[in-house]
Image (cartoon, rainbow over all chains, first blue to last red; front, side):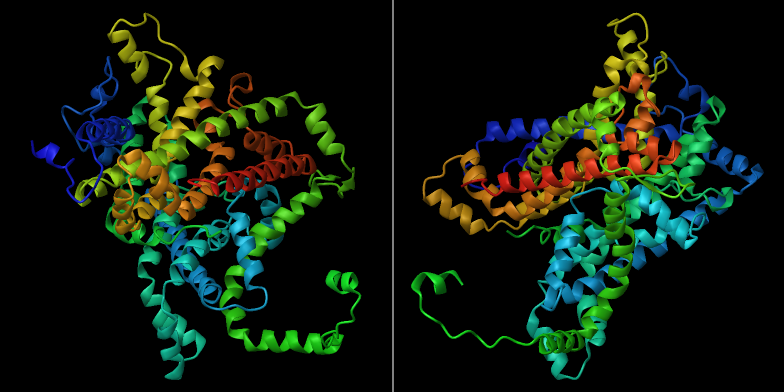
Length: 289
Length: 319
């Protein structure tokens, strides 16, 4: 009965119980479909080898074990490039890429959100237009730019372009428009210059948007395999290492599941922490007509 | 100007600023706002270097023959005519991409809205959990490898295992190497992954709808949730709907990673070949940069065109 009480939200008008029930049944059904692979991934990481290759296959683990994680450490300890190296590469790329993106996108969003000046409208229109095509379109000239800059085989080739993704600037600008002008005026009267206003007034006020940019940027960088820019083994990322392990075959299947769990847990945990801030920022995400 | 000639009157012209004073004015403006430009410069520099210039460069390069070794040679429209007239694989790729886009685009867009709409009626705690469940696949990136196990071709594959166990079939099916099944499977996994940023935007948009508007609507005779949806909810959310559409369309046309992960590259008989995988084929394997740029340009035009068209249509929602 407690379950059904959820359906009766008294503040809402025009609701029939039957339709609510059917809609929630639909939601639950698709929710199960969405969640099943994730539940499976979690279970898989704790399965002993005989359960991984059982017929018929089962989703839930019966005798959970941590062996897969120990095996992972053992295998990677013997490999040419230690696991810590892959982790360090991924962490470096992710942290610099995410923090830098938040800083640069905020700095660019502040003038666009609060002032009108020569070129401001055009620049923002270009950013909005670039939301409308994916990065695949520019893959080839990007490679040429990279090789011209001499950035092939460096982490910069992954980090630097990610600093200027258009979605971050767009969301940040929309969110900053909410900051009352009076606040900025007051700071100006107190003698603060633009940089001071940006850093000590605007930035603290857009913390929810920082978290949003983080949750959009983080999984992308965390899951990068270096693409077509990084070739040296000791510069590769954790995702790439996962690919190598899973290609190792049956004996490594458990280890692969363990790495997959590690890769998956971090972004999901971050989202759980930042969820309410993300929703708050997204509320301003609309495109005006 | 037109009014002037029509009435025949000579209206005193406004003082035309001379060229130098116009320049002076511009420079003054630039100086006055110099802090703004300084704040924007790091972002804009990178944005232009890695987004704007590559697009322009790609447009230009599509008229050249360029293999990274020799100096580019101008060939005019030849790349495009070869693309549309002499490249059967491109036609398959184009057909597949449109199949993906036509199915995953609208379905995931409607699913994003529908689930957001139902979730919005739940109590806050359950709402947070359901949001997480639906959003998690799109941020846990690499987890789509699980679908490889589900659709694995031997009897250890989950789908085969279950179907055999319950006696629905006798022999395992090679899901990912059978032309018939590849495309639907990639579409299914793409749908699973596609409830991303626009889903969050819709949830947020629904939460910001003015409750007094709904109450007023009830007074004016709206008496079920479907009317409320069409006359109040959708029009109030138009900005979010437009934003969500842009993200979903762009994503729907850019399918490649999942196709490669599930069906391989190239897939059996090009069954899951898309414009993006075709682009990768010519760009990073055959090094025909001019031709690859022509492919990129076609994709660019399709993406922007579809977005513009959809934006126009969505502006009419609820009117």
